[in-house]
Length: 600
Image (cartoon, rainbow, N blue to C red; front, side, top):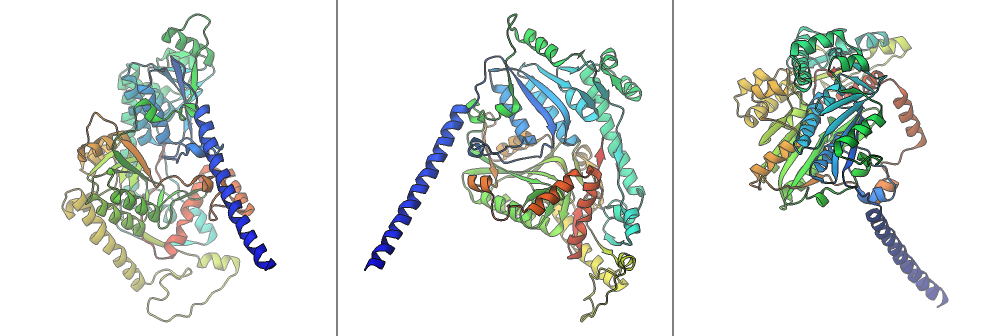
């Protein structure tokens, strides 16, 4: 009897304790939400919003107000930056915006999108000023969208032209005794294996890179000419004479003043009609992010799902890390697309693609989910800096595709390769021997090149995917014949301008343009905003705070990440591409950009 009574009491205490813990946790959450609302920054009338345009700026980073209340860091994303600009346009408390530009980690497509957003903000009549300490091509290109440009007296402008860099790893692989055996569709333009099989650009790569440089340079010089009221010829002459210090930049009309920050404050105070002796009222972008969009009449109404596909494409879940960077996981995107398709309250889907491609299998899984979703509601694609190869594959079946003129797209092609590490084994004194059953059992042997029969088999595999899947899907999605789609394929890379001329995209613009088109296709009022529902939803608070089992990192993993982050950027990028060896060793065909284009 005593044992039974004690056991029953223990169970009762356990239940009561659990309830108490739950009540305490709920109380903590309620208090955190209450504290967050109380601590939400106020915006003084006639304030200057200071937007820091710098750092990595991933396309999207989930934000959790509750997590912020507990002090969890909320990194700025490119989408968040655009949201602050949208809010500033309609917020009558914001009198002006100051752009503090300091080497943002974005490409030319997003730079165009940012310039468009700033131009839209300026239609409100609010002054937008830009400040740089050092301005390279990208920084100055963004700054020219502002009304005035300022540099400190000791600052410099390095607008000395555009250069494209292509990196090749064959020399390193030769030293390691590694030989790459490659198969590709579109041998002239689908040059992805070239970085492992050559030491310099081939004719196709050189042709495309020069075409890209010509267009980007033309857009760059024309933008400066328009903003600074010069002729394109004068701008080209200035570029050939660059770099300039602040005094020279002002004398040449490239900036408005060589001012220290306090002098810019004085300029803004005068512009906004402050009284003598008043202190300039400012609010930082990080604080302004805490002002909800719906409090300004934005982000409300009917729902439109926004799904992000940013990074290299692979099977499994989306992830981010110092070695592979952002990864688009097909499981994550498919689940988000299916959720948006089944939710009757969601009227349209906008897929934001910022990817140079990756796994052909993963791309097809996402294509299939989008094709099913399109039968239920409109699907519109917004392309970021790059939406090429596998990134274009998942976009091809959308009702409409929107991209910036400087977006890199196309690269409709496929390749496969495997490393032959026999020379490396010989170098380090390793020997191996295969015992096989089956004619093609050794097709992925790491120490042998493909035999003619094996190569023919693998060529048949990727040809089948290209001609029976990729080309027909592009042709159907873009209302073309297979012959037309193939003529635009073969791995050829296009700018957004070229893609529009060739019918690979429909409209110029960024995410906001894509949302406007989605509203139109869903028969929603053009003059009313929509509620943007980002899918997949952010992680639950406690997973964000304490991490899931899969996200908890060991000391060894943390040390490895710290080591990788300490390496030069170029070396980290080489590790990222070398990691693809493991993918292709499993027989995965790849649809990727033929090269990583870096135009500075």
